[in-house]
Picture (cartoon, rainbow, N blue to C red):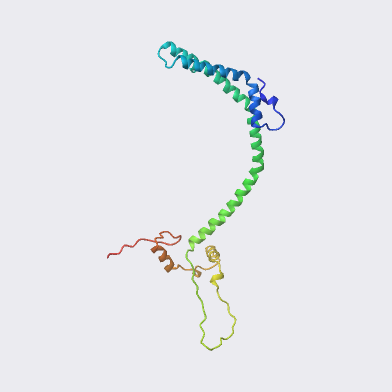
Length: 210
């Protein structure tokens, strides 16, 4: 058997082209299939059921593991494997080319993702270590009718600040811990609203006698 690879046109064949080429190569096998199907119908018409050893023997000769049908099926399976070899090789070659293209890019993407994941883990750890929020309020109360004295001073502006950046700096030792504190009022309000897990906060059930 020469196989259909020798008859393939240049370039990847379409599924319909492969089908037509195979059907042209398998003319005898297709004719044999029709003969076998006709024999199956004749057997079923003759033997609605297997009632004796003679019928059982004929059934085995036709459809048993060593019967005519299975011999043909095994031959077709062998031919199928033979005919698909060039397509498998072509598919493997195409796969290899795309792996060569995509592999290094995927590796670089994985490295960047790992770097970013390390940063995100570090940030999350920092938030766990220094949980809570800092509430800073400030204001100036002057006397009615008295113009304030103009002076220059520095003032902390919480609304323009980044609490997370401060938390990370504290975790890295670049800022003192006393710059933040637990907001017990807000935390207890959350616990009252059935929040039971807050990173860095110990919440326990206290049973009081009534």
